[in-house]
Structure formats: structure tokens, C-alpha cells
Amino acid sequence: MTGTTITVEAVFEDGVLRPLQPLPLTSRQQVTLTLQVPKQTVRWPDDVAAIYQELAEEDRRLANAMWEEVKRTWPADEEPS
Image 1 (cartoon, rainbow, N blue to C red):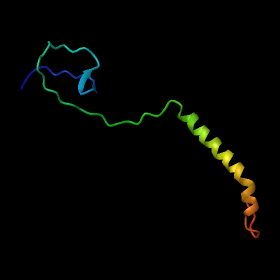
Image 2: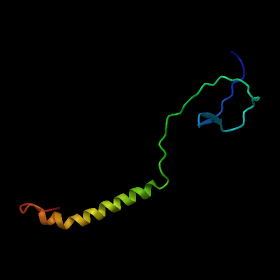
Image 3: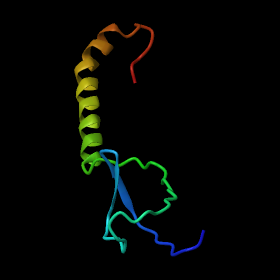
């Protein structure tokens, strides 16, 4: 099989491959597709730093809330650090 090779990016949506740019093809022209599927990448939320900051603040709040009980129940022969 010979012919022109065209490389395009497309999105698979609702059972159909949708090219991200126009293709130089005629309507109903038959083609052969070879798909290269990239590895899935994890998209971090834009506010990931804020999320970690909130978690750290919540950890500090919980530790402070528990501190008096920890001191009260600490074994008498040991000093809490």
C-alpha cells in the first residue's frame, strides 16, 4: 500500500475520532488509521498547593486540639516532647 502519510492529533469522543485540525480529504474518502495512544498523564488541579496548605493547617488544628489530652494521659514516668 502506498500513498501520502498524514499525522494528525484527534480526540475520541462519543465513539468518533475527531481531528483537532481540518484534513485534506474528500468526503467519504477511505483511509487506513494507525493509532498511537500516549500514556495517560495525571492532571494536577490548579490549586494543588492550596489543597496541601489546607491539609497542613487542618493537621495543626487537630494536633493543637489533642495536645491537652495527650499531656493529661501521658505516662507519669515519661515527659511528652
